[in-house]
Amino acid sequence: MTLDGNTNAAPRLDIGALLEAVEAAPPVAAADVAGAALGEMVGAVETSFLIADYSGDSLIRLGHSSPGAATRRVGRETADRVALDGTPQGRALASQSVEVVAQDDGTWLYAPVTSRGEAVGVLELRLADAPDEQTVADVGRAAHALAYIVIANRRYTDLFEWGQRSVPLSLAAEIQHRLLPGSYTCEAGQFTLAAWLEPAGEVGGDTFDFSLDRDALSFSMTDAMGHSVNASLLATLLVGSVRNGRRRGADLAEQACLADEALAEHAGGSQFVTGQIVRVDLATGAAEIVNAGHPPPLRLRDGVVDEVPLEPEPPFGATPGHRYRTQTLPLLPGDRLMFVTDGVLERQAAAVDVRAVLASSRGDHPRQAVQHLIQGAVRASGGELEDDATAMCFDWHGGPPRERDADAGANVTA
Image (cartoon, rainbow, N blue to C red; front, side, top):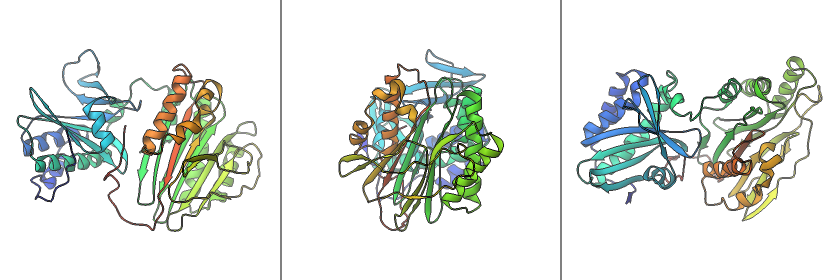
């Protein structure tokens, strides 16, 4: 059964005491201590935290238990894989509500651990008896707090990062991964944004980025030429220059010109990066885009998928001194835009009908939409991509800026 967890009864959970317990613990033990403190408050027999794996189709239960058949182990740390498909953990993330399952050994509660659309993981608890609605509500609130606890403490330890990796990253993939934002999903009142990157065996230099300020959302997608470390270093130069320009207050066209100049100065004229840089005014819905030789995005509007008409300009670094200009990116409330790199459109991945996938995604959260698209590209490539496959899905809800609980009612999956 699934319980929403919303109730007007006075909560028994003491969030202050929970946070005090975490503050007194080392960062590596933050999730364990939070789970133990919550367990004591609600009378749980056992608790555990499962972090979302980078594969997008499973969770990893971190702990110190003896390793089993499906367990990875480094020193005392263990990681058990739990699939999302067809499991109560997966249902909890998809429904964004606490999943309650009665079993012979007691009652299990599975609570989604999310923050602004980012699926951090799932909190598991086993109770000796069936919980009342207030206990379910308390567990749901604690799981939400746990998301912030993990996000804050993973800055100080590699434990959470290690747990999320199904396979070791190459040096190129490590560099590429460090270029990506700390979260792949962001939700606010007017929009929802999610992206996903599946690196090829020889990393192809794809990146995506986003930043939200008081009045606007900025995001980008880029694809550096070449493969492996050289592509990652070229992507580093491009992303660094765009971020530097944005943080200096440069407008979109100036950001693009600065990126072009950086590549011309430091990478030489034979290397280039395709990409798109977008800025959306959250108050008016006016959006502008720089299109540097990149595949145009697709738009789902009123059930119809169309290619957004954009005039191409040279890739960054291809024509030194080119003066980039912004183009209008028309948005209406209800629009869904899908941005992709050529790893989704070319070679074996071209067998995927991106338009059909986008059209069928209307009821999905953007995080699900990009994962389904990339998983399709991986399957079409026989599990071995020849180029990085990256997708970014942007939903424009419209309306004036407003405060809201971005996690309430969201349909998020890891």
